[in-house]
Length: 159
Image (cartoon, rainbow, N blue to C red; front, side, top):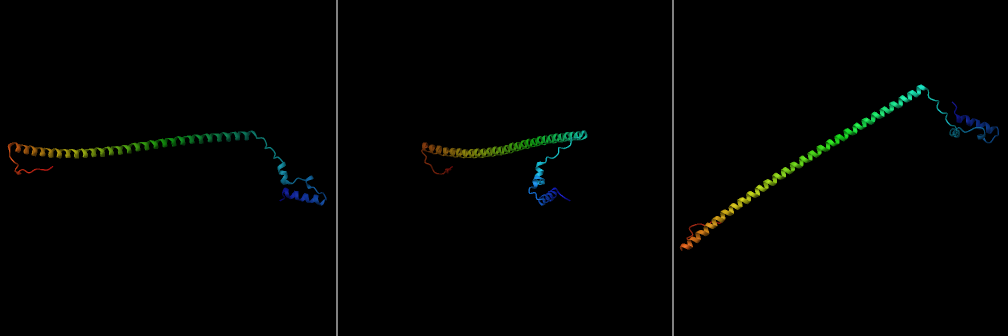
């Protein structure tokens, strides 16, 4: 097999042996010549090829449209799923916060009930103590009016 470069090298040696100094005057180096030669234009399309290319282009357009439609469906489904998840999250947050609020309100009510119960108990004890003290004072006042001295037979309760 012989390449263009091999032929060029052979011809350039022949030119040099003939006594001529400049090979480029007679032959073009194939490496440089590739840039100078323009490729021939493609042959015109036959009617069958034109029809086939048109069919291929329309098939490509149809597939692109199908892919775009599928992409839009996927985006819509994704957006719908995201909205669904966000709604579930909000629902759970509201439910959780409500449970916390109910528990807090119940704890506050129980605490208020306990405090009120203790206040009532303390109030009743103070009332009882006050009544006992008032009875003792009344008893002493009666003894003074009648001129009796207290004998100490009645115990004095302390409250």
